[in-house]
Length: 180
Image 1: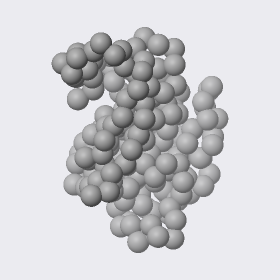
Image 2 (image 1 turned 180 degrees about the vertical axis):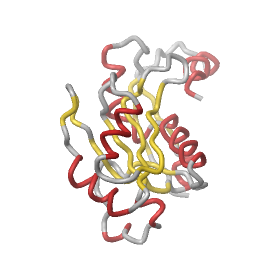
Image 3 (image 1 turned 90 degrees about the horizontal axis):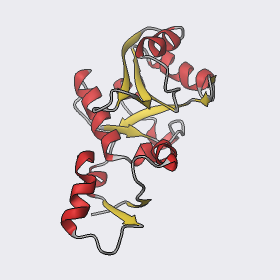
Image 4 (image 1 turned 45 degrees about the vertical axis):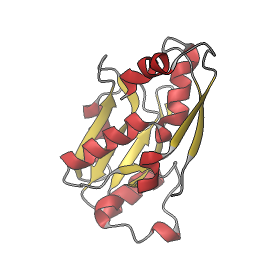
């Protein structure tokens, strides 16, 4: 089995660097994957999806189904932007099948990313080409295609550094239990 290796520095949720780490690591965040999977199930796509890291589809990925080529992930959205505003913005490109702004399950606040699923692949392509890098308020959005995740990511190891040496396994589990 091929595994993916990631290293994260543990910071308390109140840390000012915490949001920056979330922004930078969204594509590798397990919560992110579960939200994307739920979004796709809601829209009739039973496969799990994940970002391709802000890079447009390569030649090797050109055989992805049209259903997947219509589904975009939008990163670095302003915290104040609403789901309706996202839908209106991307609706100017073409007809939208669905739109989802991902929010924190506890606070209800925007996590700064969302998904837009266009009806036509041409509209999704146009959105990536014309709106990627668009400056909205104080953020520059990043748009990329969402795609099926590999099975290997589900069982990847997560390496964490900076944990107090005196922590027990139970304390570590308790610290991360709110993450799923």
